[in-house]
Image (cartoon, rainbow, N blue to C red; front, top):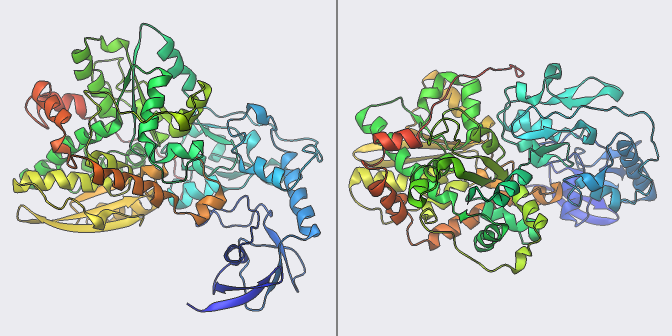
Length: 588
């Protein structure tokens, strides 16, 4: 690749042709502050915090969008620049709710950190009239507080470009500009898919998950309630980041210990639910592929953000969705049926809590047809995010780093490597193949690693020959990527048989409920890849790597779900239904 040469702060730098000044500065080890910039998501130079001086230019230029050219001379930290950036932040603060001590992002707020780094000493320097916004709590998964919004437009960009939903965007002009839903609608009244990607990129607390920490702690304190908890695979890959561990650290053992000390009566693992999902999903796919029962291709149904997208925007493909509940919901359903029977507890007295990397799981817990134990008894009572769990651990005073490594409880604590890799894009397809091939070929696979469906590419493909058929598989994550495949299926031009869809780009490891990464970290670190590697490393070390080999799953079918996967009792407890939903057409 052709390189250019330029000078940054008097030092000669070589950078690939097509680089921005920001890119070149990074190569030189020079940090230029950014606020609105988020690589490949929001590159618009809106906030003007990244301005630099370029020799010969009449005005300051935004480093994140201005191209670096051969022979260019750039200055990044002159007194003029520091004064300009400081003034920009002071102006933003004049319209910002500055009750930082009460804010969930205090200490982990990019705006707050930048004000400290650039020496903003008078947060009220430009005080005067400021717009006051009503807090929007209409959505089941998040709270929108535009009093804390700095108009960076990261949320707008990711909602439109990555998710192809565009239910939030800039409204009005000038002083009255506000990021919100069209026509002043509450977010809960739009066709939002609840993925929470807007929350994950927000640099402040203008967008935050709807919390249930107090409700969970109250249930634990209630002597009449038996509270069980299940953390998803991806939680163990990222929770450590909240306590100073490097990205890509497995903290499964300390997480189990923390949950036990918080006071949960049963500490289990969503990976058990993932293994159960594979049992049902692989049987459902076998019936569609071999017996011709059901529409093809079959879509996975583990991601509630994706399911919501399908119901809103592709309702004609609902019959292609697997009827399997997600691992979260399967675990909750079994907890209030099988587990309740084993423990001799009234299902009404069990409080089922999930810890998820995903905000859409909060929405999913309240969906219809998710009450296996009977009307009024939801499979999952509360779903909290990885971030909420970290806050809960701090709230009860646990020293996370010094906790011992412990295991999950028995009955529903066993899981296989197949269940663990659900958290990475391609993991569901790979786990399904391990069991499907064994069933159709009536023999066990020796090599269970399907590398073709791994990685962070938005669309991946694989073909396997099984039972005399070439089965073509597609794996996609992020709704903009999924749309390309969905349009093929809608048009009848797709030749796929099995399609895994994840709502978040890279899968659950990058879910909307995972720990916040500042833009500097996200832009220059393979966060998704490092978290996914944790799951594949765990998979390799597991005694069992195929869901149908899980002894606890075998026992569940033998003792309770008699008749095997897909049988009447299993179908009643572990499967669900879908419906067409209202669409607000905001995209052309």
